[in-house]
Image 1: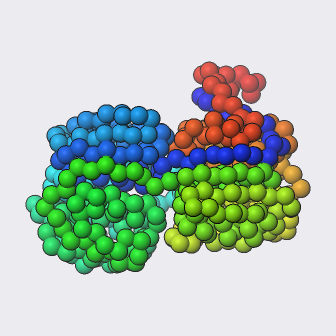
Image 2: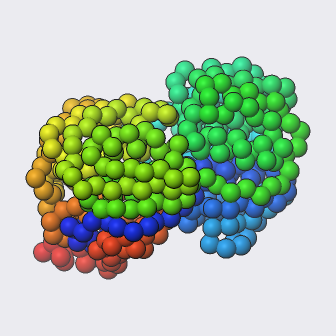
Amino acid sequence: MEKFIVEGGCPLEGEVTISGAKNAAVAIIPATILSQDVCVIENIPNISDVTVLFQILKGLGVKIRIIDRNTVEFDATQIKEPVVPYELARYMRASYYLLGTLLTRCGRASVAMPGGCDFGVRPIDQHMKGFEALGATVTIEPGGMINARADMLLGAHIYFDMVSVGATINVMLAAVKAKGVTILENCAKEPHIVDLANFLNSMGADIRGAGTDVIKIHGVDILHGTSYSIIPDQIEAGTYMVAAAATGGDVLIKNVIPKHLEAITEKLEKAGAQVTEFDDSIRVSRTGPLKRVNLKTMPHPGFPTDMQPQMTAMLALAEGTSIITEGVWDHRFRYVEELRRMGALIQVDGKVAVVEGAPRLSGAPVRAVDLRGGAAMLIAAMTADGITEIEDIEYIERGYEDIVEKLRGLGAHIQKRVVPDGAAFREAL
């Protein structure tokens, strides 16, 4: 077992460089299967979700060559049996993007029901609706294996019953080589959807409208190899922005797209932070008290659900009462119980959290219940009096590259400690 040990009370100061976007990488990497050629992808984040994807692709027959730490060559000229077993799929939700890519490449795909963070029910009905509209047959076995098959994929007009990032991406992947024209309506508009479309277009696809409600795809016969650089991670950048504001620090966050951060910037400024935008960087500082803020998470361009836990951790120290409404997932507030261990005054009723600003938080043993909840624990720990020990850090490492080194570079007192098997039990005694 590994855990983070954090001594709080030190404002973050200095510069930090943001890595490639996790949510873009986990869609673009499977998309390399669509080309029977070589693709070189730059700015890939060195995180555990990407490592799992590499293992899945290698099992499918993709040759992977690491050029440097964040640049990788993918050779998908030879694909084996298009099956992704449960042993690998269970580690990450984005494994279901292999359904779209393998269905397009091989005419069939079998992928185990995906894993990842538990925010409640994550149905794939919109994915299935899209695949079936394109001419595929989709079944789910009792054990959770999703099977899709199509002799030929044909363009179709598809309206998503709800805005879904996963379904928008997966059906886009399936439609890119479908015969004819596919029109997707009520699409998600997140930056990583635009990045995936740009990547596919660089391979010879014809996708228009990504980032809007309607995406139009003219199917093509062949996708060629390409070289492409993934966009910076909007959520990693937002996490460091909130951490700087929460600790009363002053941080220049480099390698960002400020427009992607507008919803976060607005709430931080309302909370009393000073935010200055540059061409590809953003500076966040705070000298006065934190102020109460109300927010509701919504699909892009609204406030991102993946930033809600970090903001809640910060607002636990703000003056007054903040109301946080979760508009995307059913069970996103599971991390709140961990914040309460540190003295946070938060009450949750369904998808609404009422946050009473506390004078201070105190270090305590806590755990990361999911990826962004784990980031909230780190932010709370850096503001707290004393030492906080965070367990289950594998969730955090799913989405944040070199987080210990980056935080240390900003002056945080944090270390990663390996706890031998049984040591935690002995410590409890």
